[in-house]
Length: 615
Image 1 (spheres, rainbow, N blue to C red):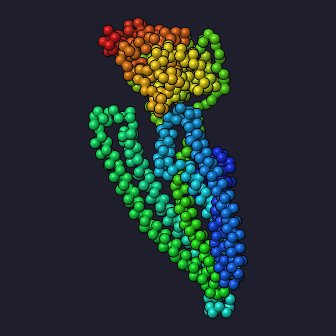
Image 2 (cartoon, one colour):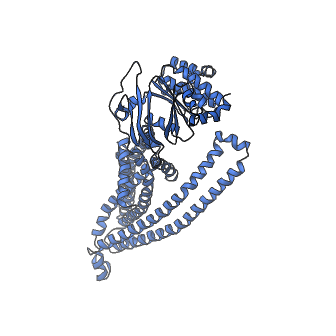
């Protein structure tokens, strides 16, 4: 990755941090400035004390100076301690804000963007990157170290200026040639060249370390994914039944050991490579420090600086080189880490693709709405295969409609388009003659109450699941539960409708698949939308049980539009209009009796194939 790209990515992350908590960066810089001042204060005090002792100052003067500087250091340490405690809270605030931003983005982005394969790849990279390189909290700490390193370099350069200006005395005994070099202006470019050589070598070392780490990360990602997959079977109670009944422990443990051995081989190889690279870095550091000692030592011997200043400058030089070495580590790690963290930024910046209209949906007391599919075709992103192929259909609100057909024929996609989770690839969907894209999305969405085939309930209370929110009408919740046939069961719960479902809570209860379906139906009823849709939510039930639920639901939504989707014809025979899908097209349309008249039609074939279950 180019340096420019790395800087741009880090700039975006830093900008986000500042936006989330404006006081964090200034406080962090202040804390690092205090740390640096305290470090240099200690070096300066040691040098000053040595010079005072050599100069024959009294013990009282030396002690007085030491006490003064200790007091200053204590005050600075106290201020730094206070800032550090505030920063701990600020860092946590930034981290929580990051999580909240991710959650908000996930819940507000277009469904078609969220379901897109590229988006899911970014999510996977976020998960793997966080496991490998840590989260935003670690990044903030690294950012602080970089800030401190910059301050150390600035302080060091300023402190070393007098060293280069101090000239060796002619009576020092050095040869005229050496004396001329040491007191020459050219010594400064030479020292700078050595300094830059050290920096470039360190940069090359860090680049190599990053290449090794990144290559291992890329290789380890699928291995880690396998490991966490099998780990979920070991720790997850939902899978525990099958694992125990079929004694799958030996098989799972064998797979875990294989993945762990592969990971061990990867990381062992990385450790050996990094050991060799770090050995070179230590030798390079030692060589540069030797040159620094020789230069400063010659200044002392030549009478240019005092013994105390020797300790001061040596401390400064050592601190500078150590800082550069550590900074290269941190900057290199941040360059690597920012690639993972930038996945967060990339996710947060994903644009919505859906056109957001502004027209209000007409509020009609008579619920007289008409929805129309006009020449609608659709294929999913990253695929050219048409799931719906030039579909034309009208849905009159207040009537019952059934959609049937074999699996994979486009029934559920039809509903996704109707609810505007996706927009058509071709054609248009109209509400009362107006393209649905022109309506305010939230208002249009409120027209529907849907129980999807893969409906989801959440580890919230029963009431919150039914109302889909924290504020709810308890009486209405109970009424919807009664209509869905779940009231008596909920009454058995210790906290009634306040009881959480699932075991995420200590008081949570597990509910059966049938109870979950009824709870999802109660949620659709609670919304009191003019259009209610059941998208095969009972596919796991036997035909008779499914028929009972559909017939009961048909009674509950008597004055609404009800759309029933099923691959079982018995569940939908009470509908006056039935759409028969095959290969993304509507191949038949009409009532149950009319469709059976065509014995060669798909509906009749499917009905006769399933008729033995309805006898």
